[in-house]
Length: 535
Image (tube, rainbow, N blue to C red; front, side, top):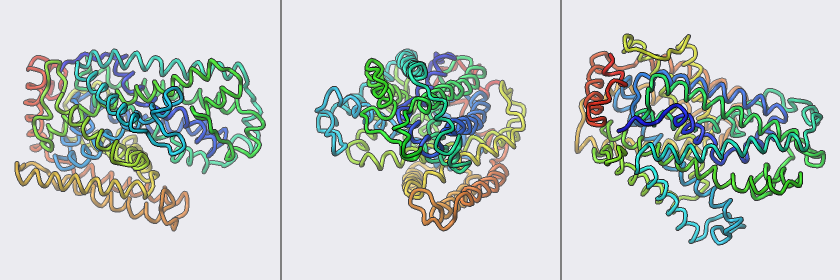
């Protein structure tokens, strides 16, 4: 592998993952739930994601490995937990590119109508063929090395940053009504409940999870001890400025007629969503055209990043001993080509066989489940590897990590039972495939005791989800008591999970295994950036 991604490149990998297709609709959803206080919801969501990003920053600066979300849990809690969380993340990643491609083609159908059926909301045969071609194109771009991928992604991300900022400036200069911030019930018409509903159900928290892609590219980053923490923090801040600016402009740009039925009554039937509708209402046709272009470029950029990131994740799962070793093999450009091809086949199968709503439902929760590892791992490594140099250290690590674990748990819970039961099926399928592979290959270092905390955790969360009021729950536990109970469960499990870390002897064995992998991946010449070598 080649460490060719600098600070700007890695930051834009994370920003490109966050600014997918969601920014076109999130301001409307957040406004419907929280009114003008949606601005506060974006701040809360950014801080919550920053807590998780900080945990990942310390870990990946120590261990800058490819596919870190799947690989790093093994270093503190063994192969079994790494398999569960890595499998969940990989499955979620496999759905990300199809979601973004479908969104891009849906918006592109305004110019190329034969791609989409319109009323039925489905791609045509030509649309499906073109989607498969796009997914292959993203795979091909990634196949020619991380330097080429980074250049293409950075170019796309500049467009994805400039267009929303132009929208913000133009709307504020054209029509900005300060009275909107106090109309129809005041600044927070639905109170604190509405603010947290926007964080949970309005897409605020889930909008930021794209920062994860920088973690998976850590193994190809220059000066990772400095670059990774800075890139993760910068990405969250940049995206907060973009999302916050769009939210401010959207709220201030709405007319009295659009607010006639209150904040819950605002809506949009425009092809490019509420932002395109606002630009059209202002009569700024060139801005409408720009939003049409952004509606295609943003998902395309998100899909490109997802394909590259998922290749590293499949490679990490192969290094964990779950996938066959061929998927960890690198081509002449230092890229896991077989892993990219595997992901392409899986993505195409999902795209052509699963209803789009099912793919979207599975995506968020499957990825967020893998996020619970970082808070547990960062505290565990303070005990397992106290002498490994850390370029970045979280202050009050137990407190911040504990809050981060609660945040990740709440995001899973807020996904709702309709999503969580699919996640349980996915985990069961992963365990079955893992067991089948073990029967053939065998592994003695699963560290099953270190993964025991996960099973009461997921069972307890499932029971709360069934009884709660999100996404198909029975609504037997009212808000916000259900979220409070989920937070209490998270804190209790967090304490147990940290205590159930692997032994120092197991840790040393995994470090030796990682050293051998790095010698193979980097040709034995780039190990100065490895925490294993520095320790």
